[in-house]
Amino acid sequence: MANIQADVTTIENETLPQNLTSHLKSDACMVGLELFLVPVIAVFGITGNAFSLALFSTKPLNEHTSSFLLGCRSLSDIGFLSVLLFVWASGVFNLHLSQIDLVCQTVVYLTYVFSCLSAWLVVLFALENCIMLTTPFSAKKICKIGNAKGITSCMTIAIVLCYSFPFWTVGRNCVPKDNYQGLVTRLVYVDSALTMFVPFAIMTFALIGMLISFIKSCERRRRRTFSSTTSKNPIRHAIIMIFMSTLTFVLLTLPSNVSRIRLLYFLKMDGAQIFGTKPVFQAISELTYYLSLAINFVIYYAFGRRFRASFNENVLRKRTRRHNNTARRTNCISHAFLRETTSV
Image (tube, rainbow, N blue to C red; front, side, top):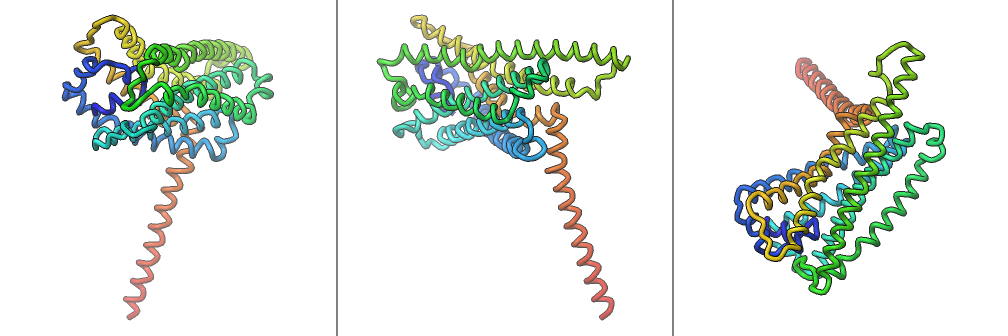
């Protein structure tokens, strides 16, 4: 597990001095917890995101722009969790893959790309639904799958190019080169802004706009129908789905970014030591970040009415029908066999 701390996910882990991470290595309880939880979270997340991607890619969900964005997010999260599982295996089985040229740089590069993509796909999802709810007439022209594909493609290309710095700033064993230490530190600050603070601000304003639109819609609905019932209001279900998706993402990724900024602050202090719960908080914050990428399916199924109906129809009911058909064929064969034996 010590190799995981040295190999993956964020540059700030790679720039920490040895005495800063020694507490984690000596904490047997935390090491054991990570050894168990990392593969569980990764496998669960890959499976759930694969189901989500399959459902968002088939009818009737694939007819909506939101489904395309959430499908892209599922694909990005699968990529991140796959890299995480790869690094976990390298650390557990002492494969020392980080010592191979370009392997460590590629791992760091992919984790940055996938994490940034996931954050901004959530932003696009929130903005798209905000436009749909606040300006429904303009949304028919703006919120099209073709536009979403174009924006997502341009955003992906920009992220892929901007995050190429690990290939020329990071050396073997995921240690930044001496002449790039200051640059790497500044880039971590930039990454925190791109993947947390800016997306958080945009999603907050989008949620406020959607809530205002929802309140106004409820007031108009009461005037027309003289009814306060909103249980069948599709806007209500859409807002709940969007709110829970963005809220869980923000809450679960916030500890990781707080830990990142704090560690960089301590690194600037000469001779700073981090004791006690701080290394533990760093490890827990990383686990919560991994969890934010792994529980998408649970959120979609719990709060997405159309997603839940599609999953029940395409997975559960098909499996039930297949089981019933198998049982029916077995019964037919059994009855035929009994008739033959009795006739003899």
